[in-house]
Image 1 (cartoon, rainbow, N blue to C red):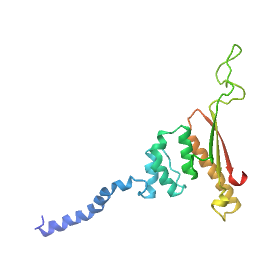
Image 2 (cartoon, rainbow, N blue to C red):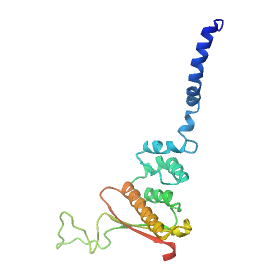
Image 3 (cartoon, helix red, strand yellow):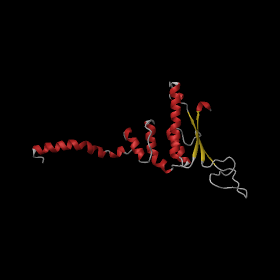
Length: 188
C-alpha cells in the first residue's frame, strides 16, 4: 500500500480519523481516576456507586467524594459512614466534635409481669425507637463567603441544611428517623 500513492493518501485519511480515538483509548485510565478526570465526568463516576452528584458542590469536594465513594459505600448505614459523608460535604474533620451523632436507645428498659408489648411500643420511659440526632457545627456563611447580602445568606443556609438532610436521608438506614440540628459557630 505504501507504493500506491492513492491508497497511501486514503489510508492517511483514515489514520487521521482514528488517531484521536486511539489517543483517548491510550489515556482511558485517566478518565477513571477522580483526580484527573474532567469535572464533567465526576457525576458519571459517582453513579457507579449509586450516588447522585450535586453539581453545586465545589469541584475539589466532588473529587474527594468520588475518591472515597467505594469505602463510604461499604460503611453506608453506619454511624462512621454518616460521619465521614458529612465530613466530605462540610469540610469538617469527621472525628471532631463539630459533627456529633447520638443514638437514642432504651436506657431504662424494664420487663416484668405488668409489661405490655405490641406493635409500635417503645420500651422504657420517653424512648423513641430507631431515632438518632445529628448536630453539626458550621461556620456561618457570612464568614465563609463575606460580602453576601442577608437574603443570599438566608438562602445559602437553607441550601446547606437541605443538602445535609439529603445526605442523612441517603446514608441512614431506611427504618430510622433523624433529628438534625445545625449550630452556627457564632451561636455557641
